[in-house]
Image (cartoon, rainbow, N blue to C red):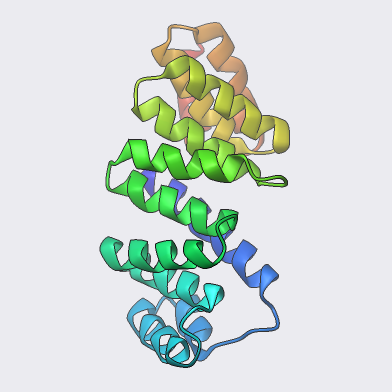
Length: 200
């Protein structure tokens, strides 16, 4: 489940970024898309020598560092990008994700919550908020956040799946089966197994 979460986040964040900045290209993008993150980070660093406050390049270098597990460098880039654009939900979600991966759920919640408050924020913001709340032992609030994510995107299979798992932990098996059924219909990995396990 952890790998699929990272893959979905990477796909969402990369797609959102590339679509917002089609007019700016860097040779680092080609390396990033091939999975050559170290080379990508070096190329973005070159670009940043000429434009040190370029949010896209800071974000991209942060993502390249994140993919390499260089979380401190990634956070530094994301935080600098956030200083330039405080309401950039892509940057906020990346900060939330890095803190989540470091098991710093309070900071993950802080950034995800900030992203979720921005008008037009994607469902992923509420989903990540729910995930952090879940880890912080706040099930009722997490349930609400997952529900908000689903309200924004009715085809968010991972949100149904995670909400189902949370409901199992809360002993709401009947209701969890509905979520697993919906996640299964959306072909989310693991949903069929969860349905088979909890909904006999």
